Amino acid sequence: MKTATIPSLRVDPALREAAESVLDQGETLSSFVESALRMGIDQRRAHREFIARGLGSYAAASQRGDFKPAADVIQTLEQRLAAAKAKARK
Image 1: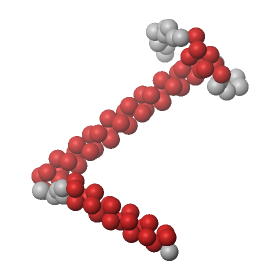
Image 2: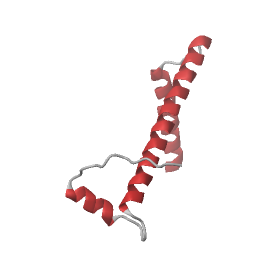
Image 3: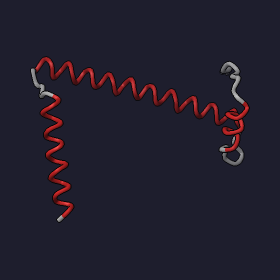
């Protein structure tokens, strides 16, 4: 399998020094950058999937008419928090 390259990236010398300062023993700057890129890709995919699930949930709730006003939800949460704080004080 052929490999591909990522375009070179010009950065401030301080950023390069900071990156080099956190390398693990035996780790190269290239492997660090590759790892960071993979983690960034995974995070963005997870974020997009999270948004898609939220929108799907919204659509399903909309079809069922199963909504509660945000103010009601917040009020319920505030009541639970107040009860938990009161219990913790005892």
